[in-house]
Image 1 (cartoon, rainbow, N blue to C red):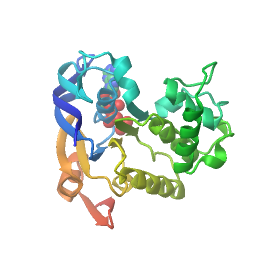
Image 2: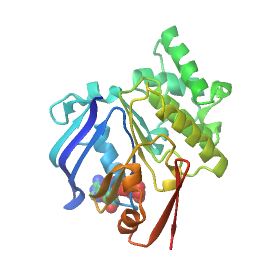
Image 3: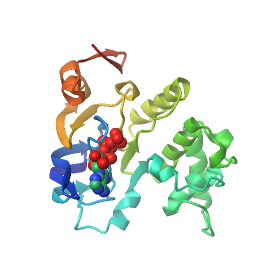
Image 4: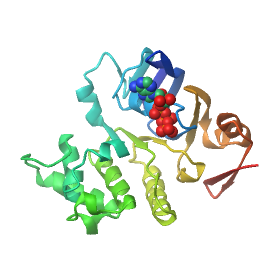
Length: 260
Ligand SMILES: Nc1ncnc2c1ncn2[C@@H]1O[C@H](COP(=O)(O)OP(=O)(O)OP(=O)(O)O)[C@@H](O)[C@H]1O
């Protein structure tokens, strides 16, 4: 067990607004976390700290045992896998799927003149197969369905064997079939001993994959609850976080919630 993320009293202030307010939170390499909270709660901002994209305004953030502000983030970032729609927008639509994944080895989007080793190409093909994308390696990224694009983003994020994997709403905009397919793959990946510590932001408890272990609820930049899934994803905590009476059910490791 190793700590991959440790936040002590972290706040982020922008234009006089406190976006994250005294957040203290620790993630271990064997834990798989989900972050839930209403629109504007600060989830993406928290992920930006975890990905070493921004620094806290106050407090201490340690990512993979390095303290933000005291480490060269250009050395730290390649150790973190990050999949988000914002990053996917930087991938040229004409890029071939194999290259979208392969270019992660150089932390670039868009293949140029880099020389890739056979070992990188073999690994990219193996990762594509693991995420059920091998039949698409020659296709252009822009021609893929939303579900396929999401899986390519995750394949790219795991290509470099990261020590911390961050996923920003990986199931957003997917239809039921594509969501369930993605959740099955994510659950399988999350349950493997080789998987790194994982943090996933989502809007829906229905999108929590099996094998996820912990949850953090955010509201107005503050932690409402955090800890093991079963203790955090409860009627009371969700009702408080979303300011409405919510009932949640758990069935075979999956959750479903509705207003009551
Ligand atoms: N650079 C900035 N300057 C000012 N306000 C910002 C900045 N970045 C984010 N915010 C505000 O901080 C709040 C939290 O934003 P954030 O994107 O982290 O929330 P979120 O929980 O991910 O929201 P959503 O669920 O809608 O994606 C929002 O009110 C947003 O408008």
